[in-house]
View 1 (tube, rainbow, N blue to C red):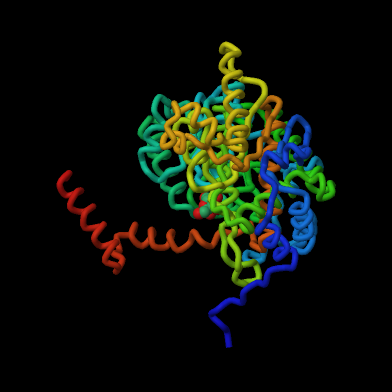
View 2: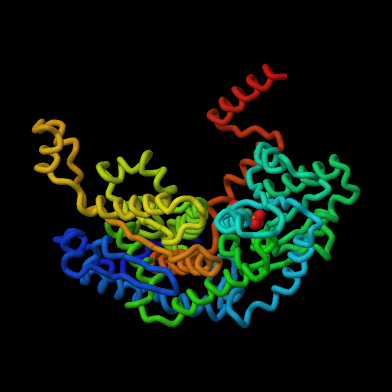
Length: 513
Ligand code: F6P
């Protein structure tokens, strides 16, 4: 008989040890730093300063034990060998192979298409795709596209027609190409945006709209069925997960804007990070250590969120990109063998850009009742020609936030700053001892960004192995898609809340009509 109740996965002994340690006493962050701090790592232009996470050595040791007990290195190696590491879909996860120096054979067709799109025939490219088929390209183009000399790329993801309507503003159909990216080629949003793009091209006098469309997919037959000409289809393997697919032809828009050399440099940076991830022992393995820290905060201390602030406008897409990478990969409650997990998994990834976020959400970080870890990402060299004062202020603010979170402000100091009024002083106290990590990049270039994103991928996969989840599937999104499809076909759902909402929409739309 098949039981409906999954077994509960027991906690390994190292997990129990971590729970004991969490009950303290733990040194404060300031004491940890005063005692030498660490760890901190420097790697190919990237500097990872993890001291202010305040994780003491005994905790690191227990995390090391847990990493061994949960087979993080074995999972990594099985992934690198192309074995099935995504059992629910029976697939390997081959994104690292795409950027390995001996794995780039597939770049030829992509380079040809990029050359055609860069030949001067087009001024604009509309990139249609959503989730992993949009976030990576959007991040790269926003971060580095200004230095490119190819057509301007505009990303359209949302099914909301407003997204397409805005994106094509100022584009001339005759001189606009469309890149449609969908791993499955079944995604409703992307297919509808493709239809609208074709209609827009046709309305603009383009005789053969499909002649201006390139598709990137792991399901070429569906792209052909949708009418895309087979010579303009770039394929990637089903074993490349959507949110890990930037390194395949999904990165085409970036290659179109910035050239194949920039795309290759991106792969080089990622490959260097992969070498580090694959060959470095746990003690110095940066993604593995970062994943272990994530586990400590989320699963052992039960901190429900992880905030990331990019102190660089060029990285404003980093948080949305990480939200998908981290939450779609590790936001699960069941292990890959079906056992129920008795611990929290991925925290909520959120954040924004500094300094804007300081004037909006940092109040909660400094004085709120949460004590969730914060990550700062900044670039030492500016990319703009404005007065150096801008970047000096930007970095000063970034460094100041981490220092303030750790140190806080005591009552005596607050009292002096409050004219001796204890009630006001109490409100000006900052508890401090709030954990943060800082990642600095020397300059923002394709190889650096490649290394940074590969670091986050490796960290996400390592955390998955420690938590016991499959980071490569995303079954949780299916039910919502099915219900949306039913409603989209005009079917009614039987629940009274949906009916009340539909009723309001119908009444409001009838008024407009
Ligand atoms: O709905 C989730 C998801 O499947 C993501 O995992 C994926 O990145 C996105 O939709 C887009 O899927 P596709 O590339 O197949 O259009």
